[in-house]
Image (cartoon, rainbow, N blue to C red; front, side, top):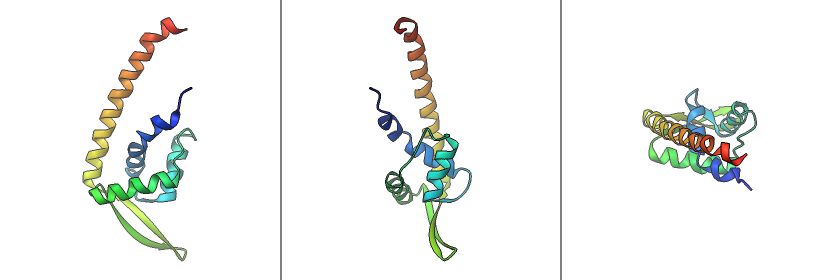
Length: 113
């Protein structure tokens, strides 16, 4: 039986960087945007998101800032130029792999069904 979690794990970084291309966002907003754009096909738990964000901030791919919004503190994440470059690298690699997998599966489908 296929396990979508394994595949999703490899695309979390790409999805996070993709939505941050649009604008600075806080954690829950990132999760909601990914869910909305994927039409519910890709859900990202906050417990999975925050370690990625912390790692990206530490690596200089993102910066963060605190803002008070309606008496609540929110940490917004901003995609830095280094993060944009990393996103382009990931996207190129992802598209190449996806193309290869598509070619493999199409080449094998005629015999499988």
